[in-house]
Image (tube, rainbow over all chains, first blue to last red):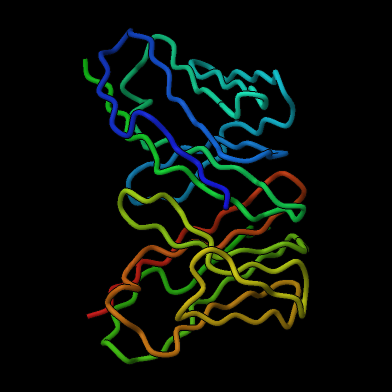
Length: 112
Length: 110
């Protein structure tokens, strides 16, 4: 059974600081996803990581994937209030697309 | 394109009632999925489909039925609602490695 664990589950940051969210998964996977969710909203796709060593960056967010360690990280640089949201990682472990196993989510709050 | 649409946006049911959550997509995607989201647990896969006429169970299928008679529609049926099914339900369609999530349906079972 594929398991996905995120940590931390709660993250309170000051504006301007850096931090990393970790995502561990239990079995070999072909695809690793990061999503953002604002309260009461649907999921917004941030990154899709498809190979070992993949790194993607968008603004203040950078995601990386280490398939050997079964670990992905989401690094936040110089946090701003607008980044406050819940962040999920998800893994697609099957041969069919669209069967995602999600982590528990990390609730990020950025304070002035 | 409307993308993925879900109806209703919000529903209140009494225990034992039945209802169908509707999901439709206009992108001609073969893969569609239903997830439920509960506090502190992320999203969990209920059922998914790889094409019209083909469905399979996900992680938490009990209490839910699905069918896929067309590529566009993937309804989720609750035959006898229970308070444990109070949740937010998301439908998604998939094209290769990209998922398109609907806006969600909030369901409260009393």
